[in-house]
Length: 323
Image 1 (cartoon, rainbow, N blue to C red):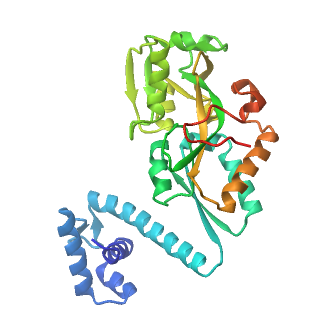
Image 2 (image 1 turned 90 degrees about the horizontal axis):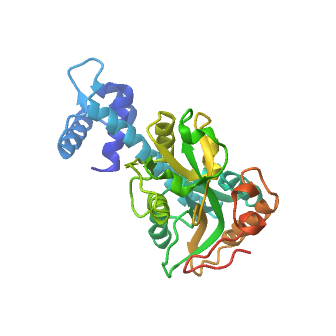
Image 3 (image 1 turned 90 degrees about the vertical axis):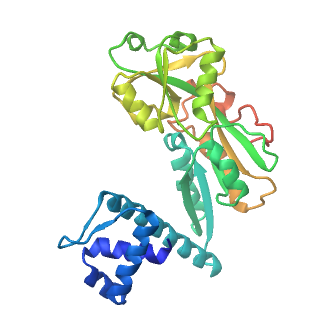
């Protein structure tokens, strides 16, 4: 399989006709048909129903078409960004992030960064915390915002704040009758929904360790891939879910109670390669300090344990103090 075959297949899928697709690609129809056939042989499944007029995609073909569009789009972005850097038109800053940071300070930070460095091409890549460390070392991202402490000597981890955790509870259930903070131990016997299902270790392990440390044994643990799914299941009365407090804005059809107890927090960690002297790293740190000083709504002092609105939490093993 190569990019040419992907482009050929996308053209046929769009035109729904081999002749028109060949004309658009400026090639003869037989080579086009042959490349699609080789692609199907490589995959081991038919992608196109040729007997119909116009041609139709199989179920596998529809899935492959959606994935091919994403791959080709990413390649175009990569080519454009590389050309811009090569022509000194702008720089590229790749930022990895866990989904929950979208409900805290990440959007505000990116807006500020665009204002202060309009020449930089900011690429945002969603990836769980455990994926960010190898991505940094391999150069696939320049910095990451995650929630998992690490001990890698090649990566600096800066704990920006310790964010309080809340438990999402189905409405009209006994635990949802009170607005007051809930002891972690009170979750014993509950069905608990955790995320992400993989890769591990991750935030799910942090939640399970918290429950274990308070001797709160769940009646059942259900693992799902993402926070949106977890909260949807809570709304469907399938269980409860522990999330960072800033993510409460995701759904209004569940009840939230602040968790209280030792360790009932989740760190927000900025990571970057050790020795990285990029001016954008320093700029990001400065903008974060300014942003926290503005005391935005998502940084509610009631939901942060660390003095000074949670600017500094406990450091990772290889960290530097956030100034």
